[in-house]
Length: 355
Image (tube, rainbow, N blue to C red):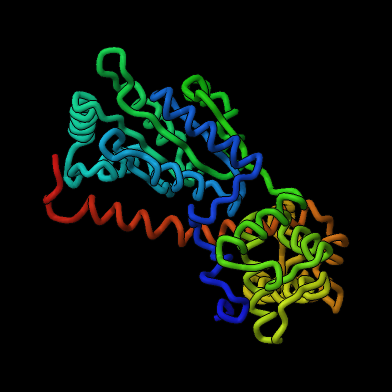
């Protein structure tokens, strides 16, 4: 809508991950280096964690697109609350194997035979598991058992596990000791700092065809974007996309901090409206302090103040943490369900898959 107004050739701040817009921050370079290191090791597990919207999926997609299909067979699985047997079947389906109405032992044999056949052809097999924090303990153990498959001295399967920060805590539990011994590298992607936030925005605008004249964003506006987004790339995209729409509607091509505040206020107010309807009768937080009651927040705390003033009032860290939980609840389902549906269709459609 606003692209022609700002002289852009594409939309710079889409919410869906796009490797073409990959921004190489220090943390993202480190995560990418770990993935590339893992590819050279060809064994064990590489673990990448980060908040929703931190850029984990973008890095993985970029890596997968760079792989030579003549040398690497990659399969991607987005996990839900699946148990061990279901996870095993979905892994098999992700590699194109028939798993419908097949006993677990037969699925394992078919999967091992497939991995061996790839190894004899000089190909490596890579499994990418996204949203890994949703796997049950038994499902994680099943993945560990799959890493035992060998052909001579060669490991037949390597796995990249991508998840949210809570998976780091899961890994530290006592029953994960054997699994931890198979992790050859782990990396956490944190938020961008204020300088990286500005670099990220300028990078995406440049790729979308922006010039120095349009749009123009002041230094104070960049700081306001950083505060409104907490440095999380997907939130930065949300704020900047709305900011450009705001400029288009108001015939405005330059932005100051007050413009960002107005846009952030609208986004914040919309979030309150969507969630507050379901949580209208509770105190500000529940008795465990785990969930933010946005309905009560709107009633007692929302005024004409700017969103960052509210954040100061409630404590910036607590607010960001609870909004992150909310964002996981709202955004994760769509991402998980679409991929899982496609895999389940492979599992349950008539037997036309390779066995």
